Image 1 (cartoon, helix red, strand yellow):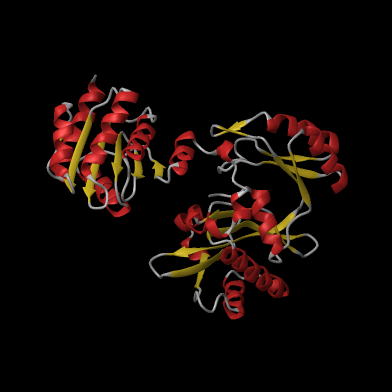
Image 2 (image 1 turned 120 degrees about the vertical axis):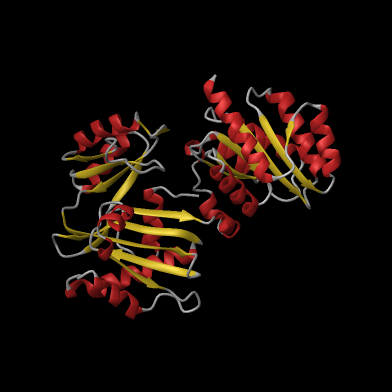
Amino acid sequence: MKLHEYQSKAVFAESGVPIPRGGVASTASEAKSIAQELGGRVVVKAQVLVGGRGKAGGVRLANSPLEAEDLATQILGMRIKGLPVSKVLVDEAVEPVAEIYLGVTNDRMMGCPVMIASSEGGIDIEEVARSDPEKIVRVYIDPLLGLQEFQARYLASAIELPRNHWREFIKICLGLFNAYKKTDSTLAEINPLVITQDEKLLALDGKIVLDDNGLFRHPELVEMRNIDEEAPAEREARIYSLSYVKLEGEIGCMVNGAGLAMATMDLTKLAGGEPANFLDIGGGASAEKVAVGLRIILSDPNVKVVLVNVFGGITRCDEVARGILSAIESEKPEVPMVTRLVGTNEAEGRRLLADADMITASSLKEAARIAVEKSKEVGKK
């Protein structure tokens, strides 16, 4: 789950990270009122959960309350990467002297959090990593001890931050890590952290990505979810506790188990195809869950073939087969479906599918090969 910029910065402020004065508006008149309170010169920012707001015209500078009202009118009527803008953040305008990147995330290979800093703030850190990797500095954080002051001091030195800002920078690093830890985040990022003309540090933008598995501990954060900006397929998957991520390929994959899902995607690519999604129906999935998963996959217009790969342990193969047949009955898909069922009640599951003239395979390798072949056949039509 992602938080909006205004939500992320509010969380940062609770941990002592300095943020600009500002407010959130749902109407142009509200934006005008906020601009008047801030002194007139403000930045009006679209609040959508995608990147590229600036390039799309969703971040604009206003020199007066009337101009802020006019810009808010324009921005509130926009769609950025398909998402409607329903709120704008109106922040006091700041003239930065320098921009810094500062973020903390999980390093799965090291098995601990890592704090990342760069003197090249204001642009995507991925772009800095490609063009100037030597300008990215990392410190690995012991999960039990937390971020230490000497580590933050090292970051300040490594990015050549002027020494008169070190004390405040260390405070911000500690605050950012505290915000990351207390919200069970997978990412807490300030980009940019700016040095202002009056020699202060300010978090000009903020981003937090929460670990969905930790949300049961944070009902106050769950209430911040903006379901209007979720893709319908992702929203339905969440309702039924399915793990779904849309990709750009043409072969829809429905699998039980995250590891098996990754293996299925790998073998699909090895066979020459591209997965259209990651979809894990989980252990013990009922026929209803299977039907919902299939419906989600079929809602993607790019899908040319559906590949179902189920290892029946907790999940029974006959239940999966019934779910598939139920979804076919209701959705009436026009794309081929290839199914591989192995495990508990697999004979019964295969019989049900065979009676319905479904394409089945005895191994994952064979299923991936058939799925890729079928996708090419569909592509030629």
